Amino acid sequence: MRKAVEPVEDKTVLLSIHDVSPIHEDDIVRTYDLLSKLGISSLTLLVTPFYAMKKVNSFTRGSLFSEFLLSLDIELSLHGYSHFTKSGAMNEFSSLSTERMVSRVKDGVLLMRKSFGQRPVGFVPPLWTSPPRIIKAAKEAKMVYCVEGNNIHRSSDSKVFSTAERIIGQGQSTINAETAIFEMELGGALQIAIHPADYRTNDLFDILTDLKNRQHYRFLSYNDYLLEKK
Ligand SMILES: [Zn+2]
Image (cartoon, rainbow, N blue to C red):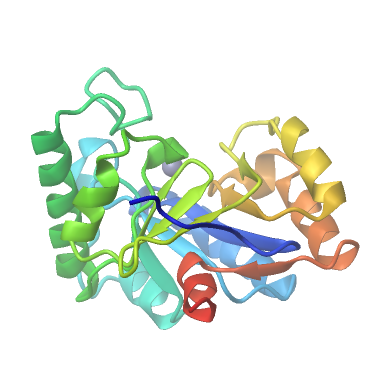
């Protein structure tokens, strides 16, 4: 059966903060403040519960940071387990066997429940890349959706929503937004990922400000967008 693909509405940004981990606590708090000041209130927090496989990077239930994140009352979703492969590359899921992939997703869900007392809403693999079988794994782990490249796969009805482009801030001094700039001028739908260090290292916030104030894009979390779509 062919799956229905529906483009995400124009002038929409599906916005997320990547790599939400205690290692980035201060930067995440600051990033959230800056987004609030811009008038952005719907976005997805992408939690990596065991960042770089370091115990100090795991969340503690009831800690100030966990409570802060919960108090925001915005979507908490899963962004990998450790974010890294054994060899240190960031695309954690790119070359895992199905079995190991499924167990990492399950472990991630378990850690989220331990840390926040709730399941992650959806799943976005590190760098948005993973073999397509991750979609099934995410569905089996009761995730509402799974992102793979430009596609957002909804579990309940297997509907696929697709954006024109993606911009991933990596916390480095330059952002590779060249292909996205064209889409931005056309008003095409985008996924934008903010890395916790972006606000102090590059011009991603200028891009967000421009999209909001000049081009009148609206900003939504993945789940808020999906909830609008029957
Ligand atoms: Zn990431």
